[in-house]
Length: 235
Image (cartoon, rainbow, N blue to C red; front, side):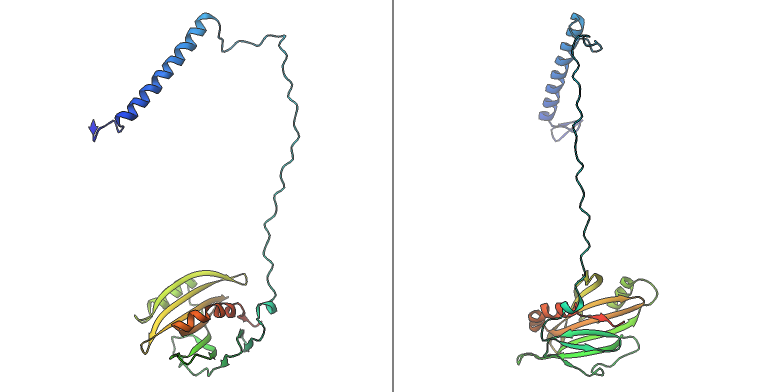
């Protein structure tokens, strides 16, 4: 069958190439047959007895030694704290922030039956042009039945429509896998971003959030990420 200049799924040029290869193969087989008939070529002939057989000399070799995969050495907690930063600590958790952050009122946001419990709230100094406060919040709640990812999916599905998930991915902080979010929203027509880290400690979910007006958010992003590495649960 011919379709679009093809025969049996091949173009004329492809058929020509195969025909040429077939011709070469026939010529080679013909030459082999001719040598066999002449007695000059014997596939099963033995080598003459007086023909020296080369002796194979074993060549010593050394297997390369595989270097073991090194496990990163955990950085001591004290080395994670930049000079001049302030400690914020409760009986449950600890976190460090630049010295211009102050302890905020834990009643700044009302808790509802469906929200995580506020453990710490800190407020940061904002620029004169900022119209929204800079906040750092640490909260927690028990993990319901099921996986952490399933719980987060359920929580996000219940968010108001004006909150957008700009980023969601798993990262490693101090050898611990956590979930990192960036949320975008508006508050009184002001663009606000929220960087959130979700830690799972046994059956307890810890949320560490950094909220700022969008321009200050990106100016402080590296500081927020550095602060998140100082978060730890007090044992």
